[in-house]
Image 1: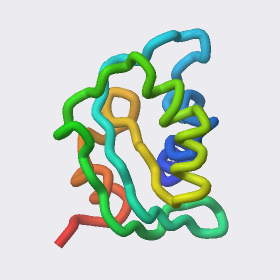
Image 2 (image 1 turned 180 degrees about the horizontal axis):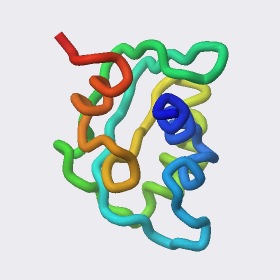
Image 3 (image 1 turned 90 degrees about the vertical axis):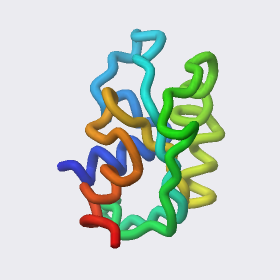
Length: 112
């Protein structure tokens, strides 16, 4: 189930359904973001590998003025995920993760 949450959170058009936000909600609560570079998915859409994870804005929430309309659900997010193989993953309280360490440990085990 949690792998499906990540896959859906990464998919540009599915963010709000993945994290349970109603489409009518105009602005989500402040939250951090993780940029997962080189995300590899299996044939079922489950994450199986990645190249690197970066905590954006030093783990602090970024301004909400435009990023959700673009990076998560718009053409920028679609290109980031579908063409480049990267994903901007929202953090808590929208997902269970606060940073890359938690995200990666949850999906791929503790980093070495």
